[in-house]
Image (cartoon, rainbow, N blue to C red; front, side, top):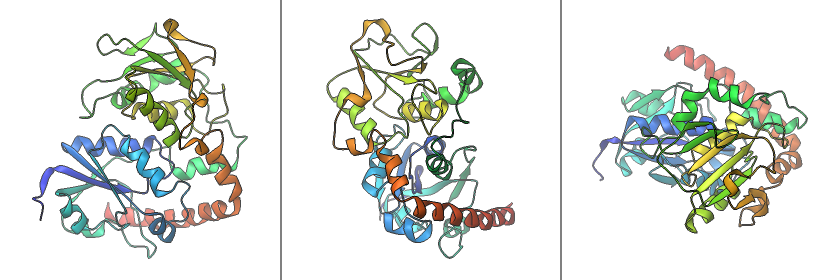
Length: 322
């Protein structure tokens, strides 16, 4: 048996349609200890307990593996958190948001570890969920989530953005952060010499984007990422959500938030749009994820209805535990 370590933390989840709420939970879990083991549930377990996934296990695991606060990724972790699995990886505690998650039978997925005193709670990220994103994709003309003023958005969310710009410890500044162009630094770490500028919307951040970024890092580049402002391309995620997804990725050295157009190129750097690349995950790009939703419209509409009923039950359980 592996010796249990109070600073080796377990966190698990579906991590479907990876978004900044997932990343924030991971960041908060990382701040509880020194190492973070992340369990990812199987497609079959999620289907049984929650409904169909949009992303399969391999895709979801690839997204988690690229997160800079993750120490280790464990596939096929049980949907109901089991102490035996935590013990196997030397994790004394599991971290979860302060909301209740239930299985297909309506039982608290963290009930066992809660009773054993091995559960640590962190604040759930409000205002974003996989359910929200699916709803936007089921209603593709919705643009009510767009920010009109990128600089105002950055000012309002400065603390959160800087937290996502930390190093693998979750504490020290790591990523350069600019707004609009290189003249307006929110955070500058040292004197990096960027060798390539990669630009795009980075909507529904997924293994395609990750593979491009990893390729550039493997080639030895210092990567500056330009994230288009809302409205340059139609996006399901708003500018803040897309920015945080890019910042949590370990293959990014700097970001420019709210780039005005596809034609902008900073400091005469070599420049490429992310959509110009091809890799093993290209099928997810250029509307690939949206097509999955639209092709199975009825299935996901039913999933959303069941999620609403399930949420009511989980809310009652939360009130019981408070």
